[in-house]
Image (cartoon, rainbow, N blue to C red):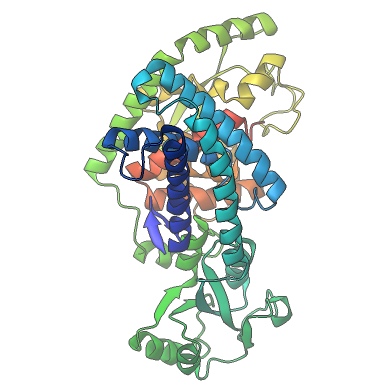
Length: 466
């Protein structure tokens, strides 16, 4: 596994992404060779840079069309549709670039010829990669100890993600532990074991280099001697919660204990890191306020024309260290929307939302005034979603470690928002805390940048709004 932006990715997946970039670059190279007839050694540095620009734009468009989400593109029909959409978008973007910077043009007709090669080679490349995933080739085999809820979550994550990079070769289920899933639920290629005897010998025999411990430590039941023996032999032994964090990009708040948080890596917030984050907040928010000032003015006019009430909506939210502040948004609901219902989460097809409100909520335009909150220092551009005191008091009593969200500033966007979307129930709030704590534990400037790029993707396609 390779760690990038505080997240772990199977090395195989990194090779897939890089390999696809090489495939696109090679396609344009071949098209250039055919159209320009330059010969094998006729490519100069500038021509290669121009081809690299095409490859970069194409791969960005593939990403923004969910072509690297294997759950979305699991059929060739969906793959074909999204691939054509991505290449069409790439053609438009490149046309704009060529219009502004004519010197970046490779040559007449090269992109059109390249598309043919790109489609053929990408489909072939992905078909080859799908075969690798379906047969579990190059997966790392692991031994999973446990049969409780944590072991179940790890099992489900690996089972539901073909590109997880792992195969559960052995599952050891202890009779002293509550059984949340049985041997019958495990895939046929997994060997189910009922005791810890001979664990190291079994690992050696099956060439397994990692053991995941997802059992509750109980006196007399925890296989301490066996695990020490395995560790001394060079087998990697990893605690189940840490493994799940690495695998899923989130925590499980109802399955972690304070000791794990105390002794785990992360949660480090140096003065330099805080300075960089604040600098990024100011640069991004001020730039966006200037860039989107025409849109802000037009939105304000439309809201005033569409419905009775003020243009801006302000509401008290709980910020860092639980200090209250006023958050600003464009009003997207009727005036005094909670006069009768009281504080409630927004729902799908909420009747309180106005006509203009439905549009600005879909494209997140209603969030633009929060840029002023970022400039003031009440919020950060990236952080946990700001919540109201009414819900905070309720959720603190239900969700473990909920109050730890307030160790950082709330954000316009965040890890929970880009990974899970809008939440309108206690279960949703629990899941979002799982992501929020992962962010707080692993926050960095690079992770913020990744969240911003994913936020752009969500806004462009209007996903997850209510």
